[in-house]
Structure formats: structure tokens, C-alpha cells
Amino acid sequence: MSITIAEKHSTAAKQYVQAVYETVSKRNHHEPEFLQAVKEILDSLIPVFEQQPQLMEAGILERITEPERVVSFRVPWVDDNGKVQVNRGYRVQFNSALGPYKGGLRFHPSVDASIIKFLGFEQIFKNSLTGQPIGGGKGGSDFDPKGKSDNEIMRFTQSFMTELYKYIGPDTDVPAGDIGVGAREIGYMFGQYKRIRGGYEAGVLTGKGIVYGGSLTRKEATGYGCVYFVQEMLASKGLSFNGSKVVVSGSGNVSIYAIEKAQQLGAHVVACSDSNGYIVDEEGIKLDTVKRLKEVERKRISEYVKEHPNAKYVEGCGGIWSVPCDIALPCATQNEIDEKDAALLVESGVKAIGEGANMPSTLEAIEVFLNNGVLFGPAKAANAGGVAVSSLEMSQNSMRLSWTFEEVDAKLHGIMKNIYNNSVKAAEEFGYAGNLVVGANIAGFKRVADAMIAQGVV
Ligand code: GLU
Image (cartoon, rainbow, N blue to C red; front, side, top):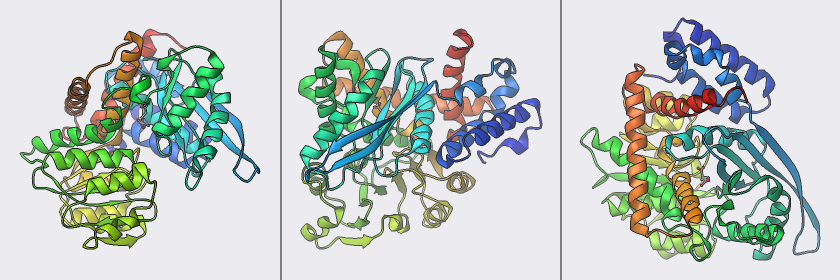
């Protein structure tokens, strides 16, 4: 089994897809992450074009791979020493066939056009899979929040929003968080947007605090959703989280709530990480400590072993995949599992992978998992819970009411089950039974393609 399925198809569909990829790679040759995301999708869509050649005539792939709009802007701010700093801000409005552009903002020094475009492109298909009325977009900045004071964060986010507000709105484009953007940053940005606009447009951002229009369960949604998705994959083989050994990379919002749900389901979570290194606690990760260190004190994960001396800390985050486990949940960042890491995991007997981060496995790593019969939940399906609940937050804002934690959690659970079932069905229908990469890509693509055809060449 493979996602490089082009060999199987010697048809016009294959030539069409390859020609589009060539154009995209020429036009974006300096954007490796974007091209990686495009390649993964395009290869798996060949069977769709074979069955529905009219999609080729409509130029769907040519259009879907080109963002509707890309905005890049200067973000000037003054640091605590009175020095002027300049960062670059982005918003990529990729596709609005299904609804307003929707997707997070990432603040991280690695952010550039390629990273934001790969994230925005993925978001189109992920958002479609949720079944919610949301298009795909993404944004962010190369600003590094690490080590910045609260006042610096506020000045930066206010400056960022002072430009971004021109392009967003509850019915046009609705940003949220991603790496480096959590409740604090969303709060400051919402305040600035409200001040500039002079009106209370609650639905302009999601991931807001509960007291000013946020949704219960949004904070937990990506991590919980990822575990719900993996639960479905495991159940199909008569397996479960209960008693399983789990490794979760990262220790941010996605990881923390993936650990929480896995533990609630009886899993033994033994390792997590941050960008400096990883911890292994064979007694089981004490989540209260991780939450305090990361959510409240904003400290490094290495501090964990000072409080729990039986645990060990290892410098360098990449080594976490050498910790043997039954289930691995990569919840840190893109390309954190390469071919070698994947081989290590397979050797140590891993049974399932659930991608909590965006594109955490390289194309080569995915091949290793699929070729070795590992259950593989690709990011756009497995981590769609966050944006799904963002969409539920938009609904609640429009209706000016709020649902309970249990109500939202139940809707999230239902959405994740649907994503799983639709991906399984699409994979079967197009001759790739069991391959959720192909299944999720096709299921996500078809809804967008149908809407694009209905709306004409725009
Ligand atoms: N950043 C998250 C994602 O990658 C959430 C986006 C949102 O809630 O809009 O899907």
C-alpha cells in the first residue's frame, strides 16, 4: 500500500495530475513544505479524475492549488528595551468554496510563505472533512513568542491585528490559534479588532475565552478529536487505548489534551516533549505538572524531572520516537517523523499513528507506516477536531448562545466518527481500502470540488 499511486494508473488522469503538479512546482519551486502537501494530495486524487473526467475540464486542480489571495504585511512593534522590531505577517485565503476562509495563525520563527501555504492548503481539505461550512485559510508571523514579556506579546499582537483586520470578518475570514497563538494572543487580537471596528463581532476569531464568546471544549478539541479518531481506527482491529503504551510528542495545546483523553481511556502515556528535548516517565506522565509548566508558568519540559525524579529528560526532541510504544501521536510540528523515525517505530511494534500536528510525517515516513500495516490517521482527518469546534464556536456566536461542555464534546465525537467513516468509505470506493491517506484526501476533495463546479469558474 502506498500514497505514491501514480504507477498503478496509466491514464489521462495520471497525466493531468502530473502536469498540474509540474506547473505548481515550477511556480512555487522555493516552497518545499507547500509542494510536499500538494504532492500528497494530488497523487491520491488520480482515481477520482479517472472516474470523473469532467473534473479535469473544470480545471479544479489548477484552481485549488492557487490561493484565492495571499497577503503579506509589515508588523512593527517596540520591545521592552524601547527598540523597534519588525516582523512579517501573512494571511493566505486559500479557498472559499464551502464558507468563509477558516484557519489558525501561527507565530513561530520558522514561518514563511511556504509554511503558511502548506497549512492553508491542508486546511481546505481538513475543513471540508468536518462537514462544516468553512473554507480554508491560514496566517501567522515569523515572530518568536518564546521569552517575550506579556507586554511585548500584547504590543506585537495589537500591531499584527491593526493590519490584519482589513482582510477578516465573521463572514469573510475567521482566524484562530495554532503554534504560538493561544487564548492570551486571541484575547489581545480580539480586543484590538473590536476597538478598530467599533462593534462586537464575536465570530471574527475563534478560540476565544469562555467569558467573551468562546466555546467550551474548543481548548480540548484538537487533542480529544485526535484520540477519538484513533479510537475508531483501533476499534476496527479490535484494539483500544485501554492498557496501551502511548507516546505523544509536543507539550502544547494539542498534546496536553491528547494525553488527557488517552489517559481517560486507560492508556499509559509515557513520553512527551518540547522543542528542546523529551521526557520519559514509565510511571505515566503526570499531566497536572505538564499543564502547570506549559499553560501557566510557560517553562521548558526539562523542569518536569525536578518534580518527578524517577522520570528522565533527554536533550533533543527528535529522539522521542525511539521510545517503544503501541500508539504514537505526533502532536508537535511538521516533518517531525522522517523515514528513520518511522522505521524505529515499526521495529518497536507500533500499531497506530494519529497525527495531531499538521503534516508531522514526511512522505517517506507515511510510506513506511502504510507498507508495514500500521494504522495511520493522517493529519487532515485526525486533527480536524480543533477547527470543527471552531466552526461550532462560530455557530454559537451567530445564535448568541452557548452550548455545554457535554453538548460540544458529543458533537465533536460525532464529527470525528463521521470523518473516519467517510474516509474509510472513500478509500474503499476508489480501490484503496484501508488507506486513510487516500480516503481522507478524496473525501475532503470531493465536497470542495462539487461546490467549485456549482459556483463556476471563479
Ligand atoms: N490551527 C488549527 C488547525 O490547524 C485550528 C484552526 C481553527 O480553529 O481555525 O486546524
